[in-house]
Length: 441
Image: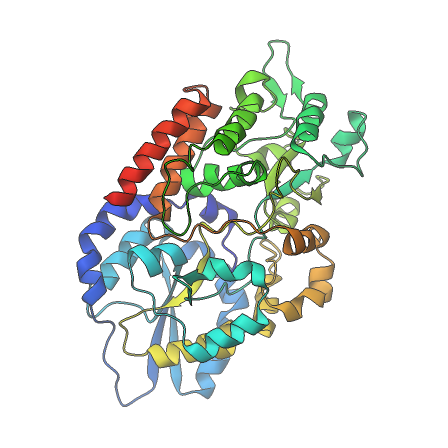
């Protein structure tokens, strides 16, 4: 299922780095779960408690029906979100307490922790045919399918979201969003509001300046980074020197810093962009398609329109995988065949996805081609922009085993510039050097 917004914003894979490092040898060689008995197969399906309500509404009824027909018992376990990484790691280090299925970030659990089982060939071949190409890189590790979202994805990377009422108030055409980064800057100059002391009270375009580093600041910076032709690091090797501090990356960092420091077009005190936007304290922001459900749920009455990411040198649209969540199968569990059968027949299907994707809060963008012509997808406010991303935006999927730590350090550099603590080049040179150290550690 699509993770709720708070999960994507506050998860810090880096927080479990030291614990994971200590447990890696144990995790790679451990056995799993209780041994099979002569009775029904029993599967434990772990998820964080934060998503239990969505799981119960969208997934559990279908899973329970399948289980009843296949002499199987599936126990859903809600793991407290506050310490779920530690709970997962502890379970995988044990021979008796590991789940058969668990929902987690593909790059970490299949890469750094190495406890996720590669998908069976038959299922992988089916998904290769049935799923839209744009999502595939986010669910593969070293070229092998590991899983797939169970209720669509938040969208193909952040896109521009703007309030047409603010456009009209500022004398801008609500039907003509900015098409280039230069235009975005010009629009922001007209939309920003300041108080008598010069403090921003309505951001022209809100910037993500605080909160979770890699999964917050970095991912919301990607539209700018990729539009200017930069990358966070080489997704194949993790190499950062000359990439995290390339001329293109530094130019993108300097661009966003104009908003927070140079021209003061965006607040660095009013909160994350979606909160600013919902409170009518920002006229534009970059966020994923699941805002189609999140904004009306949390801020009813606020008018909003989706538009493609404005261009600098390249198209800034496309899946920018850093934190793709999926139900995964425990690599060393005794019931892998049954776990994969459950995912194959119930969870990783177009029918199942469509049911789960329509949860009113999250409203996932579907992965299965068959669902793109359904009334649900065609009726989404972001449908045209998501289609544009499919056709034009390649994105960059950073599926490296050390993505979490690398992304955190990269984001720290961006943040230092945006908050005026360092110049862009100084901040990104230091970030690139530290990222190389992380890569080699």
